[in-house]
Length: 584
Image 1 (cartoon, rainbow, N blue to C red):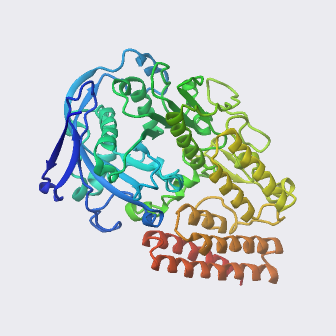
Image 2 (spheres, helix red, strand yellow):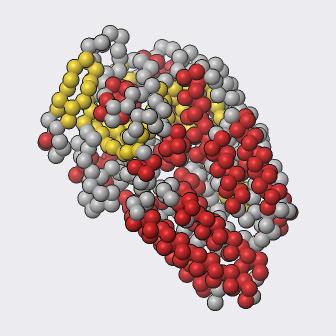
Image 3 (cartoon, helix red, strand yellow):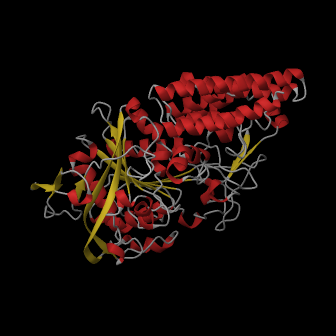
């Protein structure tokens, strides 16, 4: 194989001289060239006023987990193809043969890669997840990092984020070039405005994979054995076109996963494809019923009951980033409490694990049950007496419910409406009964192949630490209903803290918040006007003070970042003050 070393002086961009290994474009049979990679790009401290740092740079202290985050630019020339734009289903099924043709060749571009990877080769499992970032919000949203990040850190995956679409760069005010002209002004994915409709995005995504495979600097010298392309919602739609019409030209990805969207997938490709669909795609918010198709030896579809297009974990896990980088609060204002608590992250993790095994060992993922639909082809999901969906993949949150978890209201966020006290207490007469039922449901999910053992254990552990089955009343300052500051509560603060992956949160923070939740629920059960009830609220407030003290200690020891500590301190202070008022 003919290789050449390319050294580029990029002082004009304000960066240092770097060296990248680049495959020559004339390698026999190669269609996707390896781009030139620039970086890693130096960064100021996240939160700096000039925004000269990676957008949405993680607030997790990655070195505590043996990982590092770096950002690169990559550039070259991309082709425009005659592949159609995403159609919502059937339009691109006709593009199965022949594959896409080049309309305009060799259009210059520059894009970016954000890389989060293990630092120790022994920790790296050899698999890289490459995400086509979602731009629906008007900026690059790394959904496939935000949701399954704990899985990557636990299992040793590398994650790479790719900016493939113009909206992520040029939207006002938060496209990258507007958010930080200092850092991102040189990025260009649309031929300097000459190409419309993100037509270069397909080649840009292919060349990102080539960079991961062929430029050692991208993974810090780690060698990629399996490269999986992923995308959510709008990005899934574009990945469907890509998988059908462009990727077959030169299959640079070993597998493709589309979540919460995507075209009908042709049955003539060599690359395995999975879809992970939420209930939202069937319940009328974003009707994907026209894209349903049977499983094959190269295709699997996993529909998940109760899972919403954008769940609570997705929102809360970026809460500190939204405040730091965009000055926004992570909250919904729907009349119906929003954001399903069915844990999307578990199914992103298990699908990535299943695809990895499919590629490596030829073991296909399990076949999932479908939803029971009420009025196809129009949207509609059959529901049980609690309002939860019938059919599809079942999680413990659905089979052992404490709330209605659906996707029938509040747009893409779906619904989360806690059951009243009488219903919960009737369903679970004792705490041990509740924990036993969650354990059985979680283990059944593992046996069916839809939830990984570590995530099932997380469900069981949370059940064991919960108040369900204790015959208590979980009033407003206890219940997980919306988000801060609309509905401050002990359960919500506990979830928010856990979602942010603070190193040392267990045992320094989470047990204290479990005790806060118990004391608040006991206060409501004893009565808000009784001396005993008020004492419980005061006890909860005192425990929150302990929580904030321990949070400061974790910050001082470098186990969390200032933006995370500020977010949680503000929330804990709000809740503490409300509890003090309730306790007097």
